[in-house]
Image 1 (cartoon, rainbow, N blue to C red):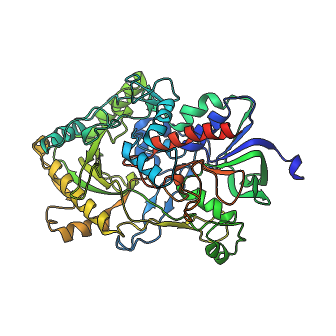
Image 2 (image 1 turned 30 degrees about the vertical axis):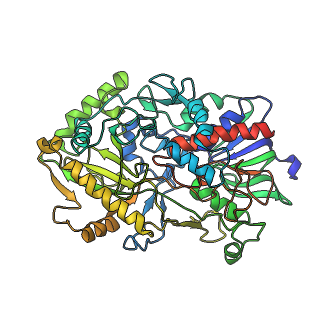
Image 3 (image 1 turned 180 degrees about the vertical axis):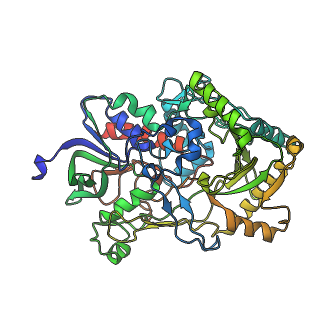
Length: 537
């Protein structure tokens, strides 16, 4: 078939994750535009996606997870870390812990100073509000009537409440909303849930949109490269169960594949560092040295305790009645422990190196967590996750080969910068202090990790190197910037430099990590991008 005989759409959206679902839905709101949304994974039919507590088991399902591994990390005892990423409608918003966090005002004002013109706080706040349907109602900070339901948790485990009390006993304030200017303190997270069920980006944006005649949804379609006519993107090639196919775009190709797959796809299409592309045997269409660079992620260490009392979400015979009761409550009215996101409470604090912003984040888990939940641990316990919010270490994404089905090489280069090591060290010490507060005394606990024998800074840092994992927030690999910035991949309108008809709309465009969970900011990026794309159209 010739190109003009192939299926054609105004817009091709690659990736139906948080950004792609939102972007395709917004572009298809006007019947004059035809949109095709392409997802490599399957539909979000696994029931554990929609039951909040089901997230404890989702990492075991390779059918909905890319299941990446990093390169050996030289500052983490050469360990390879597991990087789960969603491979289904909703992407990682279908497997995450549903915490709704935007980051700090200063995060976005900083983006603008780095060349992301129009992405300052005052410019992005309207898009956060546009996306949101806030259970607490509208105000200067929050919106109602948007697709994304943001709710209070319907259930808090007593251990989670003990953490909030312990945080206060350690000198932190109790906060009701982490998405205001004052975010230093502890409290319960608001979650992306609707009536006790997960509100993924797919549920929020595609539930209604998928019925529109001008939106075509293609699942199980692995895009392998962008097709060009000269320097203009005109379509994509994809692998399906029926074989190789091509789809074409009359207006734009929009990459929403995330901080790992988007730079991979650009490089497979000949856009990236010329030397690297030639090294793996790919022709160079546009020499963009920043593609795949600037990789940032939140590294996470867990101070883990074992409880001598039955408490939290334990794996034990004695816990069976609690789970049966929870299942009955959930079936009856979507309440009880099964409606929990597990990471119910947390907060923000400062390390010794913090300036005007909290630079530590906590997620409290009323259970013993091992290997991202892939290994069940018998007994009762709890853990406090701590991460460095503004790491200075930078990594990269590279191609393993020219084979589009081969996983890319992921090197986050964790703890390369001494700043990150000190912040993590301070964070672990503060986490220990909180868990030693009187609020936890009733649980007669003992510390499993790092372990009471680990006391010196040197030994604590060795624990961090030996046990830390990702908290699932990779960004920055196709970052925004000015034309004068040789490492910028896209401009402030998210258009890929050196070519036409191609934009990136996902976490990879972030110049720097925001101070918190990244799902809400990615949806905001898609909301703002939709307006820019339609304005250009």
